[in-house]
Length: 127
Image (tube, rainbow, N blue to C red):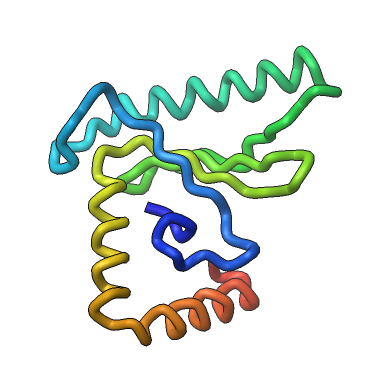
């Protein structure tokens, strides 16, 4: 879950935030997409309401909400810093983080290759 947590972030990387669904203690439970979409829509509405009611104090703006992927995502921008933030609701985020870290441990040269690829894709607008 996220390049910052896995150690694969660049200075321009977004911040990934995972909103847990319920009180699940296990990371192998089946995803509840409908509940995740509901939570992300509530966040989107709250941000929009805050921006309408208090435009001067607006802190975030919603870039987009993607409900098509396996894990729905809402992309925000922190207005004062222009930092991009991706919100997701999943119980399997931890699995991806463990996978990324174990790959880096087993193949240390992959980190440099990944960062180069990530930078190249960003330069070409494909990130």
